[in-house]
Length: 495
Ligand code: GLN
Image (cartoon, rainbow, N blue to C red):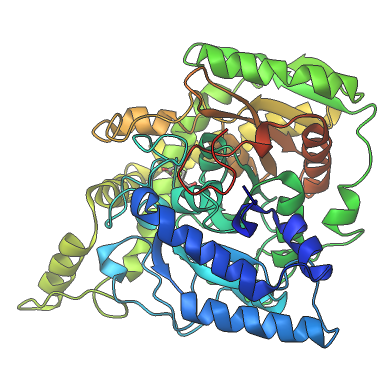
């Protein structure tokens, strides 16, 4: 059967568009046909923008005909996580409290994607306010993993991951505060990049934890991650933590070989709780990487066991402060009350789901007088020590290799009633946010049940390119990323 254009990567689509064997309108129509075919099962999206997408695609085709094309993203359909503000398009954060919120402006990453000519397909599902690891905390129902519809796609960017894995978008943007790009990428068999903190502007990303949040790509391969990162990154006057980037572009810097690269594996990563199939797949990735010239060494990250507790103090603390703005007055849902306090209470009680309330209560508690020093301040001190551990490790290593998740995708409902179990699924990802470094997830195998497994590469600050280079060379000699989930209408059929 002919391969549907919806199954292409960004670089494949860009090549076909350049060669004029495919138009952006044809590509965009193929993606929406695919959405119609599989979305009832997958539920990746909260909002589709088909009409506008087709108009953008037609504009892209006109630019190309006039020889004014803008590069590899021009005319390529991209999905956006629904915590990224889009002008005139609902942005709900999968929360009832923002159900009717339509932002009057675009997030900087959206402005940049549009400037690059990308076609926006719609807004994808997430855990409410990005709190979660499964999309089950969405107020609008969970997304499903295209590899097994009874399983979660991961979270919180689970809708973005499911959309890309099911060919309902060529690629997508997500956000990552403690793993929300990387964990769903791993569970859906995708490449996902959490850029170095400061590389990508957070302006227009509805804030979860401002010292941890970064926006990044979820894509069918590493090359696409580099293309998307290049389009969205760089200094922005609207985000004071964004940084002026110097040197070669990330796509240039991620070309080339990986001969002589030193990769560290922390002994603390391979302890109990790691599924044997995940361990075997990550271990198996060493063979092709060694053939490509990398050497491996064991390192130690003594504070690794504290990463999750630190994260679950710092992240809710910042979240409780960021979510104070949702009071029924400025945005979204409002419940009337006899006085202003009652109005706040009623609006917030009705608007927030259980996990959001849990985070607000936890965060408020650890920031309150009497507990601030014991919990929040202590967590910040431990965070600084954790950062030092990573910086030390990255003095003797060019990158670190870890599992992305302790297990492959779990079943819908399996952890929904047990927050601690859910939090444990972030055990390999949260440190990277706490220490501000870049990390890339790449598919490295499948479980016996046919579920994707991912590995994580962690790099030095602002050296995202080395990770992309390792990932891209690895993908040159492996084909885990080329497999497609066995969903109907996938163009080529199953695996
Ligand atoms: N799963 C983690 C949490 O629940 C991370 C979420 C995220 O990165 N947005 O906080």
